[in-house]
Amino acid sequence: MSDQKPNRKSALGRGLGALLQDSPAKGKSDEILPEVAKTGISEILLSEIQVNPYQPRTHFDKEALEELAESIRVQGIIQPITVRKLDSNEYQLISGERRFQASKLAGLKQIPAYIRTANDQQMLEMALIENIQRENLNALEIAHSYQRLLAECNLKQEELGDRVGKNRTTVNNYLRLLKLPPTIQAAIRDQQISMGHARALINVEDVEKQLAIFKKAVEEELSVRQVEALVKALNEGKPKKEEKQSGLDPVRKYEMNKIQQRLASHFGTKVALKANDRNKGEIKIPFNSATDLNRILEILEII
Image 1 (cartoon, rainbow, N blue to C red):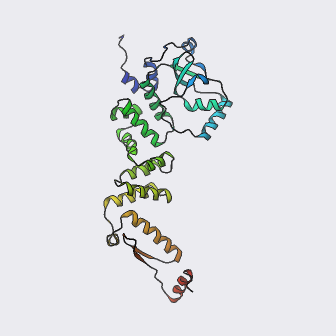
Image 2: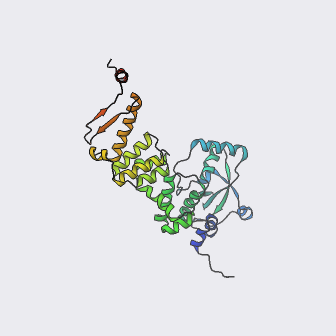
Image 3: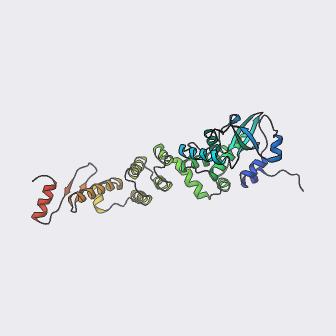
């Protein structure tokens, strides 16, 4: 049997377990407690554990944490957290921050934990990869995690796909979200729009028009298909005949169509609305008889 040490990149490719097993120590102490060597798990005081500075998740749902805390009060910790040993009675989380935070809410003093050794870069890789694979991160958090793996762990995009179990196209779609304006990124984070909406908006080069379509999507609760249609019309630049006459871009035309629909609904008849890019235009309300005209005049409160 060869004594050659396993290649670190191969270990990463095998997942978090391989990372933990092959990680060299960098902390002040390399020792592992005797009870850990026997059972693999140790009870650690919550007060001795630092949170992971490389944690990619930036938001923890309070209600979900409370639910997990209640489960812990009843069932205890089913799955131990994983920490690295920094010094005597000093540890740092590698994974399991939700369980750690919920345990504090549940009033626990100790928590079961696997103790491992890892340097700072390995901590970052493990935290990012495990969270991407196991936690319900929002699309923006995943995008930031991918970006950090590329920038801080010196990974190439094809290597990143292998590490996180995604194809290159999927990884690239997430990374492109980071090119969107901050307002739209915040909406992704807050789940005002979906990944599908965001992917459609990415294809709008003009930021003002991009924001206009985004605002409309949120206010009118447009579906992904509707946003895609707006973006497609904008990018194709093939307005209908009346659009050419008015000089309206597809976004403005869409707004006029919505107003026209509301007028038609209000008057109970087809309404023609025309406007140019200087907001000048006309409204035509057809009628079929004197009775129909009187009905429209009554709606307008003219008679």
